[in-house]
Length: 251
Length: 317
Image (tube, rainbow over the protein chains, first blue to last red):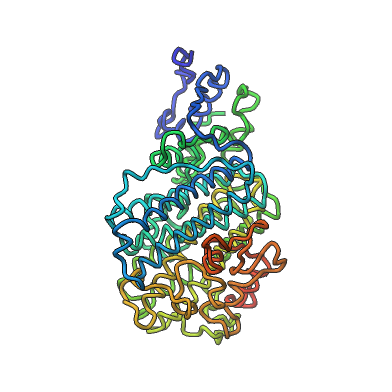
């Protein structure tokens, strides 16, 4: 039983001044690794498969289905926007209408592409649940649009390492940058100059006085990835029972 | 070996040692140790591996991976100094837009830091003096001369869009080469999407400064399919009519056109993906092209960028 495992850390290890032992272990990842080594010796008995979940499958087919599921959700979201009072109230030549029309087309194109590419391997049509969205309210629509777009970018970025075929990686790359373009514009639409933010990017903060010295500062300027399970925990909130997803091969 | 003492000693000469080690908490996993028994005999190798990774040197990357990352790093330098010069210039970027360009400049600085750490001693170097933002290969008399001068904001934005879209295509083209190194691949992907966000914003700002636009907020101005050169959408429509400056040398048509081996690097107006036609079922030709960005090959990327460096440098060779 894991809960009865002895503490693997040698109690006698004396940390030198300035390096608390626990902090050191945290920095090196040693405690995580040691825990992992012990875990590896236990039977994996946490595999309670929920028959109600739609699993995306394994290998590249699984990743493509994972992307297909997210695109289904996005396409359904933008299609539903068009039935709402917020969209219907937009001027025919307004920027917002053009933006939402384009997003609906792009996400439909992504969805249709994955469905065609997957053929008989495609997961079923998912039933969305947008009851948490008020399609009559601009703020509700755009807040959720931003959440979907940011989630999509983090999902593609976090799935890249699981892809085995260079062709499929290239395809994901062609789509993720368009999702990022969407995300940035929706964010700018909600709050100008918010196209990147600390919620999605590990912002780089230059050392004061060294702004013109490249690389001098903290942070990385890299977007934060999300692994499939984290993404699906969010996505499943917008899917009906029977359409909720799992990605058991990608953890 | 007293590992803790060693770390403490390193801290005296490198206060950032913990920061260097920190992002690699899962370092053990990357050694393929999960599920194996850790033995004393494995420790020395593990320890040296931790430091090699932390300091970015000794990571085994192939020459192909190194080339992709160095091209990316060179492009980041091109962009960093371009934006840094603009931020410091007087009368160029309106106050309302300065925060955005500081964010972009800082993001590029972070990307440079990340790429340098991975490349270690193999990283290319560059200074402000290496670049000629007129597009004149060091002569200073290229078609974009004055791009950092007062009142040249529209010109500046057009060049910015061309640089960032080249960068997005370059990262996309390089990604498959990075597949043997999943962590490096993911870092590149995490940079790639940030560059795409930058492109989106620069395009939005261009709509604002176009004639008739509201200078404070481009999100209120729709893209103009009849004038994509000056009033683009935040994504690429077809080939954007060859970009902000189609009839100059260099021409921005290169940024949106096909690369060498168009079957792998099609032009941005491509509407067929993996053999699947995207047009149809309500999807127009324009929407089909907008929905997918396209990669660009290193040779074409270098050809574009080479106009913007002194011809005596080894950047983009």
